[in-house]
Amino acid sequence: MEPMGLPEPSLYTVKALLVLDSRGQRLLAKYYDGSFPTAQEQAAFESSVFSKTRGAGGEITCLDGLTVVYRSSSDLLFCVVGGPQENELMLSAVLSCLCDALGLVLRKDLEKRWLLENLDGAFLVLDEIVDRGVILESDPQRVLQRLGPRAPEPAPYGFVLFDYLAGSREHGGAGGADPPK
Image (cartoon, rainbow, N blue to C red; front, side):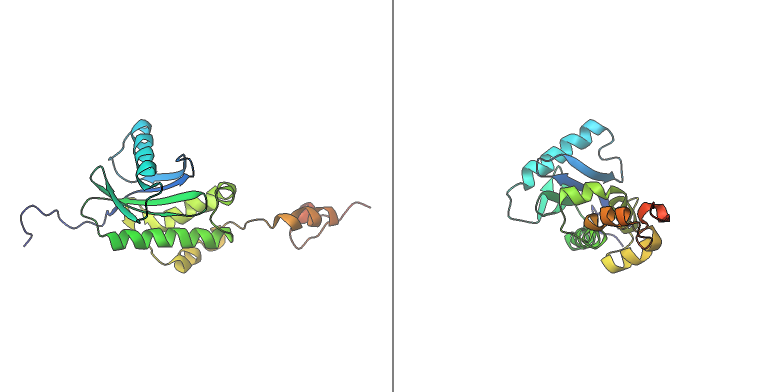
């Protein structure tokens, strides 16, 4: 029997996943319920999240009646937003999975430049971790396994031009054709 005043437990634990840059601008965001139905409300919420978490020493904050778990990297701010009664440890597990899985997909440090160049992979990671607010996975290795062949391969930039010029078939250089003679 539920005590009076406490909400029923729900699988819909995540209200939003956000990735903001060092100026508080949205790079990647997914909202899973009607808490912020318009783009203006979302932008205002993201701005308040950024101003509340910038320079703060903690990893958890309450904002507008919501629980926000966040982590900063060099020039990115990752946030997982849940309801006021959500378990911070569950939200923190989602955040850790998100950051670790993105690091594995990008095979680099979590930086704005690499994230923007691999946004398709970043959205795939988000979709494998949370679907419509329901946490599907909290293990970054399992997220990568579930992505399987859909996981984008970041290009090794130094070798792409060389392989193209040399006509290497191994990395798909020059479309796999023989080099001109």
